[in-house]
Length: 102
Image 1 (cartoon, rainbow, N blue to C red):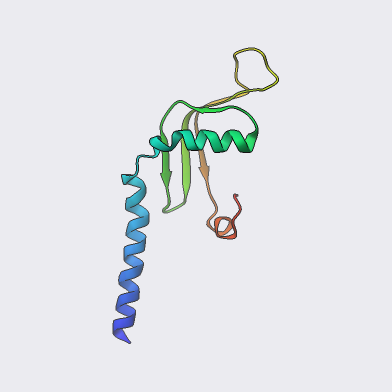
Image 2: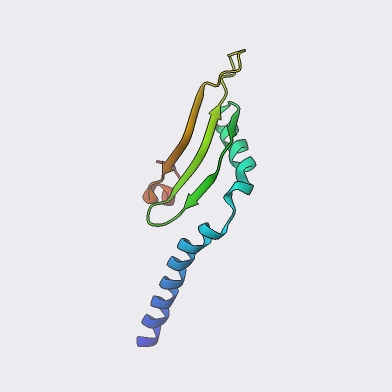
């Protein structure tokens, strides 16, 4: 019984350590094109990220984009519909487990 609990405890510590350490090691800026493409597809507008991208899983999952620009399709001028120096999205763990974003 003690071996099972010790194994489960070690496994839990390993998983939590990975959730903290892995996002710090991954270069999320190399996925900037993927983020832009998916956001453009979802919003049906041209989305551009000019700055850094940061992702964390613990203690609260979040994604942070810097120098975000969303183009207005109807506008012929060069001004974007939406521009932000930084945008942080905190995600609900319960909603993520259900497969939705909140």
